[in-house]
Length: 237
Image (cartoon, rainbow, N blue to C red):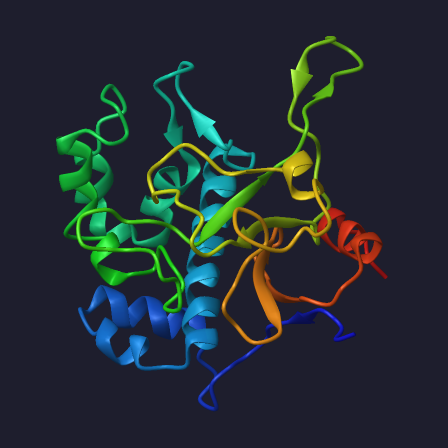
């Protein structure tokens, strides 16, 4: 079984790949990035989302919630982190309307052109159609809430820095702005946590994932359920 691998790729000149990718996107040169290998492009995408999550956490003091808004009118965490991914493109989030459904015409126009035209929302190998709907390849693991010992209220569980926050799930049928992700309990139903609507990729041996600390890792497809639980939960040795 392959061991999980943490990406630490740096160019010879000392420029992190994720930074290079961000510069390519911001300068309208995404074509060059797309010509990289699918695995590298997928890593870049997750690294940018990691940048967004880290920026959101710095600004708000906590990780982004899976969704915000009243039930039936939620908005995805993926939209919330956009301004932290491309702060220069502030027009994206200023025109995105939280008082409208996530898939309203105004909100679709807010994300395209701009963020979605850079194709950072999905793995290059994802077979999902892209003509008029923008399906994502990256889902947050929705862990069960826990009860606060002091207030008695339900709250999000605390996560270790090396816990996995976002996983690759190609062909999941979920749009980038859609407030829907991967429930933790659903992952363990059936014989395998790998497959459609679970951990899923078209990379040869691995599924890409993003940790809480912003590092991108590869999860071997032949990992056991027991070891996968440990890996996703963090505090691994």
